[in-house]
Length: 211
Ligand SMILES: Cc1cc2nc3c(=O)[nH]c(=O)nc-3n(C[C@H](O)[C@H](O)[C@H](O)COP(=O)(O)O)c2cc1C
Image (cartoon, rainbow, N blue to C red; front, top):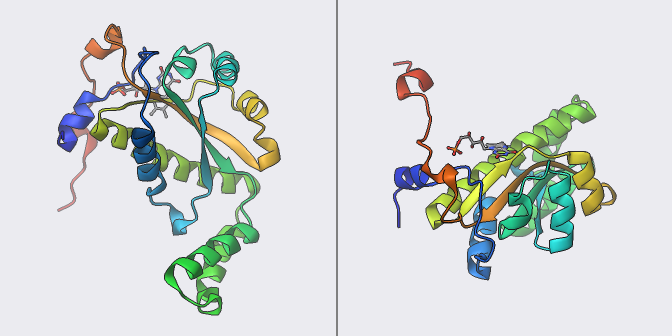
């Protein structure tokens, strides 16, 4: 088990994946479970992960991803998509889940539901999707970190055409919209990118302390 700094130093934006090396079911489950545990604003989780292994679909997605080989070569492709309709029905479904899990009568949660609905109401459709996208990126961060801890390479990508992804995956009909994707698997032993020194600003540049 690596400590968190070793894990974050070990990970990098993997460019070349070992095609023959696949995640085990347990490894995949562990990554997905960790990512589902990511926090979200109010707990609404207005996003989904589409885990794509189908080779024909992966080839089409690669074309829609400016030909990036990792889209088809990594063990798994995880597509983060947000709910297109962030409305009262979405809040009600979430509140029902809180009620079920915590054994709280729905009427006792009416105030919380009203507060969430009140926060969403003034937002435009675009603002709602932007807000959902922030939650999806937070989850992406958890997926990357979980991968690093487990010794699994997770490479985030924004270099793709989201509209084409939605079409290929039939997301429109499911009320979803692709925002960001990640390839998960294992680095190829000859990935030249693995040798690059990590470039990060020093702490003095990144952290402002107010004491
Ligand atoms: C949201 C996001 C999108 C990215 N999109 C791509 C991409 O489309 N293609 C790619 O090769 N790298 C992509 N990267 C990788 C970054 O370029 C990389 O993380 C950054 O240069 C830092 O390097 P490191 O991750 O190896 O430490 C993306 C990273 C993030 C976080």
